[in-house]
Image (cartoon, rainbow, N blue to C red):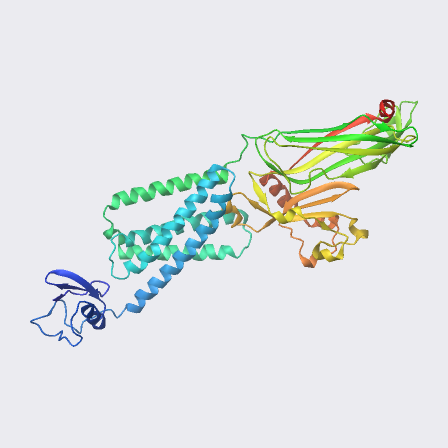
Length: 485
C-alpha cells in the first residue's frame, strides 16, 4: 500500500498494488478506508514492508486548515442557495405567466440558471472534498458568474428608481458574495480541471450574450407595434310609452369591442345619461353665457341661441365592471331603460360611455381589485371615509405588477386604485399609495393632493393606463315623436 504526499488541500491519496482505492484527510479516515476494504483495525501502518509513505510518515496530515475549508464550503453553499432562490422567484412568474414570448424566454433562462446553481451545490462539496468529478470546479465557477451577472443587472435596475426596499440588501449581499466566490475560485485555478477550457469559455460567453440580449429586449421593448383600438357606441333606441302612463321609457344600448391586438383590463368604467334644458336666446348671445351654465357634463358647450343651459344626471352605472377584461376581438353589450316623464323639461339627452383601461402586456392586476370597498361603511377599516368628506364611493384597490418580474423585485409595490360614484366622474391612478391605516378618513381630493404627480404620470405611461369614451346626444322632442305604445 502506498500513501501519497498531501496535496495542496492536505488530502493524501491511497493506492494498493498501483490501484487508487481512496483518499484520507487524517489517520482516522485512513483506517476507515482500510476497514471498508477488509483490513483489520489494528493493522500496523508503520510497517514499511506493507505500507510505503511518501512525503511524510503517518504523523504528517497537514489538514490543519480543515476549518477554513469547511467555512469556504458553507459560504459557497449559502451563496448558491440564495442565488438559486432569487433566480427561481424571478423566473417562475415570468416563465408561467408572462404575456409575450420574449418575457417567457427570459423566465425560462432564469429557471435554467437556477437549475445550474442547484447542480453546483453538490459540486461545491466535491471540489473542496475529494474531487471525484472533474467538472465540479467549473460548475461552481459558472454558478458564481451567473450570480454576478444577475445581481449586477438587478442593482442597475434598482439604481434607475433608487427606492429603498429590503430586497436590495439581498442583491448587494449576493453581489459581494459573487465577487468573493470568483476571487476564491480564481485563486484555486479551477479551470485546470476543465477538460476543454476553451469550449467551456466559448459556451459561457454565448450563454451570457443570449441572456443579455433577451433581458434587454424584455426590458426596453415597448409593444408600440400593436396599438390599442376600441369600438364604442352609446345609442338611444325607440321609446316605449302607454296612453295611461305619465312616463316614457327610452332604451339605451351600450356596446364596446376591443378591436386591437392587445388584451386589456377594465380599471373602471361608467355610463352616464345627462338631461339638458335651456332657454331660447333670441338675441343670439347665448355664447356669452357658457361660463354661467350649471351643467357639469363631460364637455362644456355653448350655442348662440341657447342661454342658461342647465344639466343634471338622469342615470349612471357601471358597464362591465372594474377588474374585468376585454381580450383582443372580444365585445360586450348592455341595454338599459331610461325612464322620463312625458312632460319632461329636458331639451336633449346626452349619453356617455367611458373606460379607464390598462394594457395586459404591461402589467397584471391582482384579483383583490375586483371586489369593491364601500367608503361609507366603517367596517371597511382603512377604506372608510365619512360621507360628509368623501360622499359615497365604491373603491377598487389592488396590487399591480409589471409583466417583467425583474422590475417587480427592484421597485416598491405599485397599486391601482379606482373610485366610482353615480354622482361624479370615475377616477383611477397607479402609484405606490396603499391606503395605509394611519391615513384613514381621507377624501379622494386629499388622496390626490398627496400623490406624487411625477410618479403617477410615470406609472400611467409605464402600465399603459388610458381613457376611452364615446358620447351620443338626441333631442327629447324627437324621441317623444318616435314613442310607440
